[in-house]
Length: 338
Ligand code: E4P
Ligand code: PEP
Image 1 (cartoon, rainbow, N blue to C red):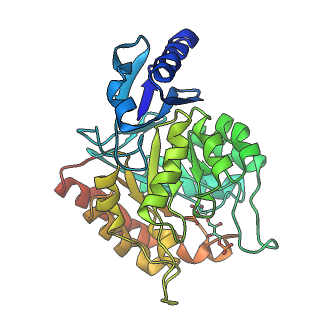
Image 2: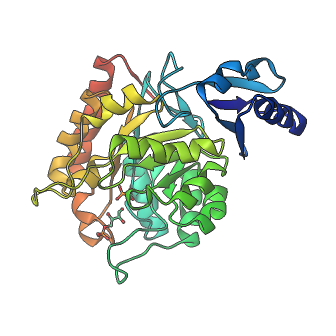
């Protein structure tokens, strides 16, 4: 069982809940987050039956959920959740396009990319200041300087920003600059990082691990939620396959499956799935048609000179084609543009 405390619950409300659980023979595990405090309860069926925590002051919700992931489970949620990133919704009624450079390289390149993103209909800007690279000799990102550039570009172009954090030690500085923190595929099971972003007070995008099952992905999301942060968006970005012609295999089934298993919004990243520009728009269309709540793509004004993932960055006609897809297909499914 999981007990979610109301945002204004006092220390004595929390202590009363713990006492209630312990006097009934259960064990209480308190997780104090910036946004909410969550109390996990462990006990036998008989113990859980006798608890009546829902009537105690400061308790917002009690949940008895059979799935191993509790707070992110679709059980107990009549409707899927909409989360807001700097005011921009991501959820079941809208469609959100996130676009921007794979990596922040210079102020000019980031600004130009942001303008391309906005012209294509994006309402959120992506861009990596910390880049998870296979090779330690490859461009690793500009770090804090990249965060500053992103924040300046946000002010000029007016798009809230999503950026990756790779290390729990950087969560504070990334939170100061970003509107949403991204945990990438390579860190999906970095549990210390998940707990740190769970306590950061800003929405989090959790990308699927390269070989993660749906349950592993949701258990990772549960680490974030368990620290009191339920503002999580799941991003399907392709999984490892046996086919060398594509970088990763976009798992379109993940969209409806995750929306069935969890109440959280689900988006797709066709750029990191395909790894090649010519497949990005077809895969984006497939993701939208499967019911994705948004799409995230890489754009670059000069992909041939990009310091990271140039082969998958959209520009020119391909970007126009994406703009057409996002302005037409979501509406057919009853979604408005976010
Ligand atoms: C992306 O944004 C990653 O940093 C990128 O996909 C890294 O891949 P690579 O280092 O294998 O090129
Ligand atoms: C990214 O979106 O910049 C990124 C590194 O993606 P992934 O973690 O999916 O590889």
